[in-house]
Length: 615
Image 1: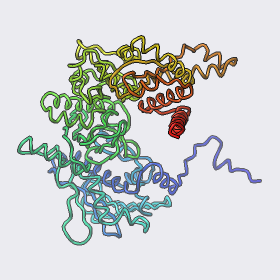
Image 2: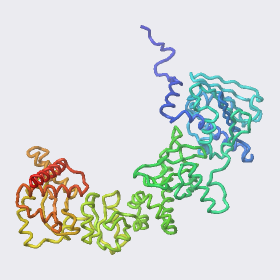
Image 3: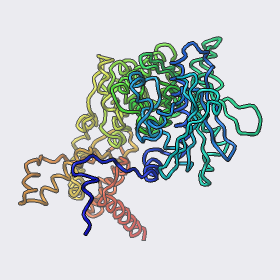
Image 4: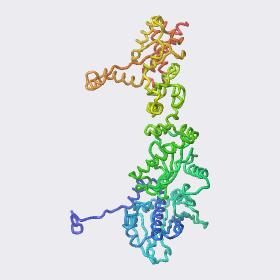
């Protein structure tokens, strides 16, 4: 057995981590970055930060004095900048030490907000497409500074050389990559140009691209952001912003909302979607930080209820995550989210006050989003509740129109309950609103806040049955035997049977049964089945008198008048079951297996009876 060399590594001595660079690059490619394409963004970002530092050294230089030049001809990819450059000491300190960034130096750390990057691992992303990174740099801090060459390889080794200043006559940095054969998808000239425009179209420094064919370099960002330009008229500005939104998102906006938060240096636009989107489905937003595209799927920039817009913004003070592909959740982001939400509320308010046509088109497409906002926002509630559409017994109507006809507004708790009672309630003169859709019931109950003269109540089965006319005593007595047979046949469904008259006469029966009542009956049945056990004791303590469903037969209907005169017991039971099944189907609620079986059995029994009678 060989003992460790304690003299070389005495107990308790500090040791240095050994980094497997290939393993680290694999970690970056599979878990930090979404795609190898980010290598170009990282190089452009480093170049922008270098230009920012150079501007600090030479604040009087012309605005276009320093720029970024990209080159790709299929064999190499090169990114060159006129930035602050690196000294030999900088190269050893920052390029050869994983996790350290030149932007962390003490002189710069105090003003880090001027730089896009916050992490020193960006250069490693180049190993996603190349096995070697070549950096040639010359510092702008010293007039006669030499050029420094650094070559880093994917196996973790690197070399550094000092070269004459003539090797790079001007200060700045050039990064050259020789792509691997399997990286052609990301390093072809056309792709490099497309990626440069994708990431850098809003950068404030001039960026050009050369494909090596000898033609003039193409500008990657020929114009400033559309919201930073001047226009001859407000209409021209609106059209330009809408055209930009259409180009970025692929749809013509219903309207565009300008976003401007000077406190965090944020500018941009929100494009109102022309069509509705499913509830809760959130679109990603394009977020640039200091001109560089950070993310196309930044959901966190807006609150959840704002799914009717897509935004493109450029900000100065938002903090990117380590991958620089999303935003870091902090107090600044929370404040930005609240401020942008306020801008959207203000746009809705302006539309309600001055552009009813735009408001109508907006609500037609996005009433669900507005309802979700109105639930939590009293100002939006007061402003837009009268305009929002609801399903009512008078058809689709706004609450404002509905309240003019009905001073008492009844609201159902479910869609199926509304469908059960709509036709009969309408014929009885009752004003009922379908409260089964998301947010609707809660909003209808807040109608008196806008119209104090209107009262709102949940629809109770007793309220509806109270508006159905009783039959005369003689008719009731004649139907006693049939009603007894019907109640016995439907006892398995905890359903009572009554005879009334109501409109429309074409409706033979009405099944009054709420979801809550069905749940209570199910719980009571379970309690009965679990008698004697611990679970039974618990359910027994909760047990209430289970509410019964009610099948109300319509004496005005010819079929019902024929049915109640049946004196054959089996046929009476079958007809009652058939009437129950038909009423259950008209309610459009899900049928229980026993109800489906009853419908099939009663149909076959009636058919068999009819055939026997004919024969």
